[in-house]
Image (cartoon, rainbow, N blue to C red):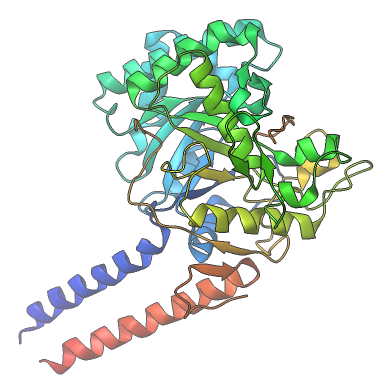
Amino acid sequence: MSDRSIFFRLLSLLLLLRHFLLAGATSASLVGVNYGLLGNNLPSPNKVTPLLRSIGVGRVKLYDADPSVLRAFANTGVELIIGLPDRCVDKVRDPDGALAWTRANVQAYLPGTKIAAITVGNEILTGNDTSLAQSLLPAMESLHSALTTLGLDRQIVVTTPHSIAILASSYPPSSGAFRRDLIPQICPILNFLSRTGSSLLINAYPYFAYNSDRGNISLDYVLFQPNAGVVDPKSGLRYGNMLHAQVDAVYAAIAAVGGPKGLEVRVSETGWPSNGGDGEVGATPENAAKYNGNLMKLVAEEKGTPMRPGTHLRVYVFALFNENLKPGLVSERYYGLFKPDGSPAYNLDITVPLDNSTGVPSNGGGGGGSGVRGGGDDDNSSSGYYSISSATGRWTRLRRAAAAAAAAIVTAVMSTE
């Protein structure tokens, strides 16, 4: 065999090996994670992608379109939702401004960086800025038009995350209803999402409901632990956890206003803090581990909610890191799965259930409460569960295995000479 043939054969095999390694960060997962940057001690973005691979997460939701982050995720296979911050919403209301923003923050990074969706603002409708709320849908329309102009509307959708506080009623779930004052703004957004093939995003935190009403809400119920459950007296459906009840309350609210029947509800943020201040008695490492660990296992079952059993629940866990510059309660700075140095915030068994669909598009007892969010190892097991405490070690072993495999490929090719 000629040296030229050996070279090209070796090159093709190494490229195949690289593809195999990157497959560990594919977007074929129902579980994603929110990656915020409100910290002065966070690792550089290029150190984040190996950490994601080590726990098998292939979907990430961002709160802006930071160039260093978008470049770091290029050619990794990780699917991104990028965010347009509140402060930029008015600027993209103008079609020319939306086109300019999309060219600079989306098109410029394609196709290397895999962008699936753009979120416009965060929990705008439940904020105190009525002018911003009035600009929300026009900004979404302008961004979608910009994507259409650039030929990107079939691969990237536009949506906006809402607080669960858009509901006036969430219990029982079948009686879920939007706040009357928000209905004139919500209904056109629901129609936009349905028309463009997007999904309704909800930030849902059972932690807030529990912390504000511990006397009436079972901790096991909010932590997905075994419990008697709560039966909806109207529908007869039994709920074993509050998150399912919250999501179904949103589905009921959509139906109550005659909204699109095929619109899917996804959880854009949910999580549990591992530490808190006075009055935050539920914010502990043990509870955080139970909530996020059980959540992952629940999503892995792919059973959906009681009201929508055929629609797999998709969630983005909040958050990847503890962020020390987040304002508000002490707990706000302790939602991370990891500490800024990459070590686990607590021991947690997680699962990464696979899903053949990609992207946000989809046509196919309650508990309210809203915060200021937003911003055992067994490599041989087929269960899909890994210990977050061994994430770094697992990735190191994977790299060593890759090096050994590369050496084996070289030996195999040379032996054919």
